[in-house]
Length: 376
Image (tube, rainbow, N blue to C red; front, side):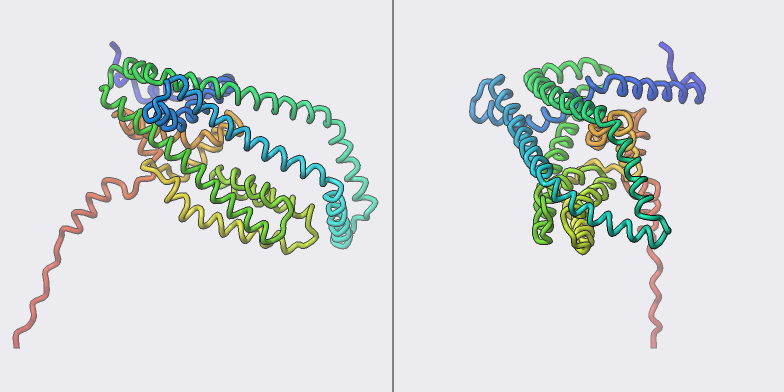
């Protein structure tokens, strides 16, 4: 058997880069298979306590407990889809009034541009007509893309439900398979990785749902107090966007401000929305997130941003939501395997480093001689 340590360092690095490149290709070209499968794995881990409660406490048959758990999850998803579709339908019905407010804002903007840039209203209108003409030529393509997106979403939901049911049913066999595959690692280590991964995913997903609910209530309450139209829809939508680290809050503020701008004639509403959302985000980042979503696995900010960007580049929007749970599971695995521990150190946010702790402890043990008091 050839030991990979016999190869020079640059060959080892080349092999690792090729492996990463191949994994990226597999994810890009196989995302229609990988995305539903990964979502179903996360959903099955989240539903596992429900299935265990039904089978062990209420004495449901195993297949029935799994089926009831999946139906419960589908009911929650169906309610969310109905809520958003109803709110979007209301939004579309108010398009005439939105257009009126938008025309008023456009007139104000046109007069400001005419004063500052000496560009006449006729020239501005001509530029807008040219731009709208380009949009009209791509209208059919936009409708086709929208239909394709809805069809793909329905397909994903159906496949996730089927995968989740089967993963819950065959979970014990999958565990035995993983222990048998990694026979070069002790069974205890594999069991520890599986148990910790399950705990981290459950805590992360459940904490994320609780945090999202609290943020949605706070956002909606603030928007209702301000008097913004579609307050509940915008509050819930901004809370969902808040899941995306570092970027979601700004997208939520921008979207809410733009919709408010088209439905309200008061510019002060926009200022209050920005201030309120920033305060809620500060409370979320410093109180809610550490208390509710915080887990034993800490990921540093650099890896978090890179993971979100890479996940979005490879798999689009699903990759953004799957980035953090995937990195957390990878860190658990890396910390348990000797050769991969440096990678686990790179993903983590452990401070201070071990060397500095040793030095600090040594310094702390040094006692300075006390000054003797002079007699007399």
